[in-house]
Image (spheres, rainbow, N blue to C red):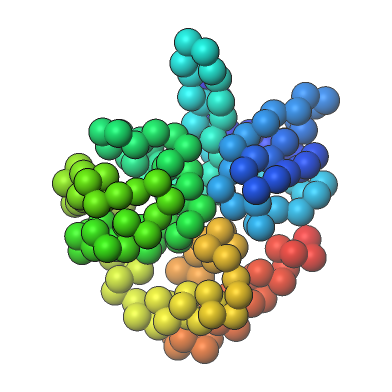
Length: 192
């Protein structure tokens, strides 16, 4: 099993990225192409999906997102592509919050998720997700406000989730401070 890939971003689309590593290009399904730029050096945690007629790699910027993906595909009736689409449509923290507070209406807004699947996700995963990360998010209304502000400024969920861990570890206290730190991190990623 391929646990992670490090290399140069050769090319990417809305659905996948090709990572070049020592002359070999690996096509990886990836939910957040907006977090990438050509020729950027990246490391992605990967889930290696193997079936009789298919082998695919799914990539994630953080281990938390990888863990959530693995838990989502353990839900009856939820496949890799649907789980990847869920992660592309929302932030890691918002998905966990929706599951923990049984927000079926929010989960139904995800691509490919109906009422029955949303209820199954909640039934299977509520209380089993990364507890410490969720507590950090739900216990910090200033950070949640800052994330909403970034969304209203036009940043995509993938861009926001790619800097989430850095924001949690920052010394910011107010929503405005979190937004300033976030904008600095996002600018650095685009330039870098």
